[in-house]
Image (cartoon, rainbow, N blue to C red; front, side):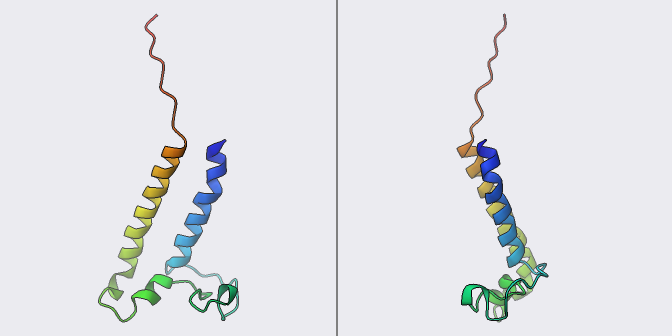
Amino acid sequence: MKSFLLLPVAALTALVLFYLSQFWFLDLWPREGLFGFEALHPRGDLLARWLRGTQFAPFDLLIWACGSFLVLTGLQSLVDFLTPTPPEDHNDD
């Protein structure tokens, strides 16, 4: 049951990572930004915007991939911690 409840958390995390990437193609809110925040541009690609003008700008896709891996690994560790599996019974009867 806990796994079913954690599924929306995983989906929301995937959606946020997708929005941070350069692969976001949806214009779901006006140009003023989501909830009036100009930093939340409707075209996504926030990581490239944050890195623009720095020496790390050419590596935005690599940084996004590594960051996504770390976030998803942490999320999996959290799920494993919250949903422990019961120990197996090894009876040799």
